[in-house]
Image 1 (cartoon, rainbow, N blue to C red):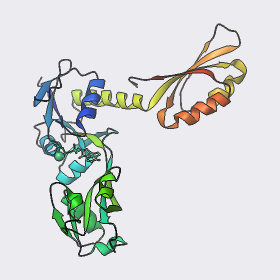
Image 2 (tube, rainbow, N blue to C red; image 1 turned 180 degrees about the vertical axis):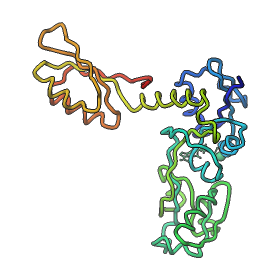
Image 3 (tube, rainbow, N blue to C red; image 1 turned 135 degrees about the horizontal axis):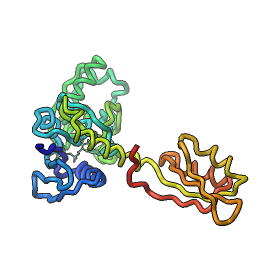
Length: 283
Ligand code: ATP
Ligand code: ZN
């Protein structure tokens, strides 16, 4: 059978995390910066290294079966592809920003103003939804210098920390969309055996990232209190220790609730808490 093709960014903000994710899925491939295509030796898959802007169309047109790309790029290219899985990296927000000292205070005051952006499609949709008619100036890079040069009244761009805005005398004004990297697939191919296999591997890696494996010791008297603190886990293992009256509890804890949960467990009598990363969780 012909191998599937997955397109990922060749270099840039999504490249490293995309490669890491695929490697964590157990896929074995060479990651030469010079190659456009790299075969996976232990799975029927080839990896295509492309500019991120080309990925949605390549997937839509079937040149690649799958792709890893930012939602912002998918929305901007308006392609018809399937969203298969959010990937939790490459997070950013696309915002409208104004020069410090701008007299604009509410959205509708953008009426008739000029806005510079590399994302005209997303901006146009947002303005239409808000019934604002503004002059969209499409430029391909360094959008943030445009108000300073007198080329626009506002900008619409990706903002992560806001440092670039600040250093160009701009301030965030309105959040339009938030975005993260997603796995996309060609329409109609979602149920392909190897696509499903890959999605499942990716999900098991993502689940593992969200949880930690925890082992703790506790006296028999305190055990009921400890078990009450571990809801949602079907069956924490409880193993007797050599010292009578004591047990070890093995369980998994969600990363987001981690420190809070650990202090509650300590307060309830947990001792010798050992925390380990989990590589994969296969349901
Ligand atoms: P390419 O050469 O592949 O066209 P690029 O310059 O368009 O790359 P990058 O700057 O590498 O793109 O960003 C790729 C994606 O990373 C963005 O489309 C976005 O989804 C995501 N991203 C996350 N945080 C940021 C950020 N602070 N600035 C820009 N992109 C970000
Ligand atoms: Zn790009």
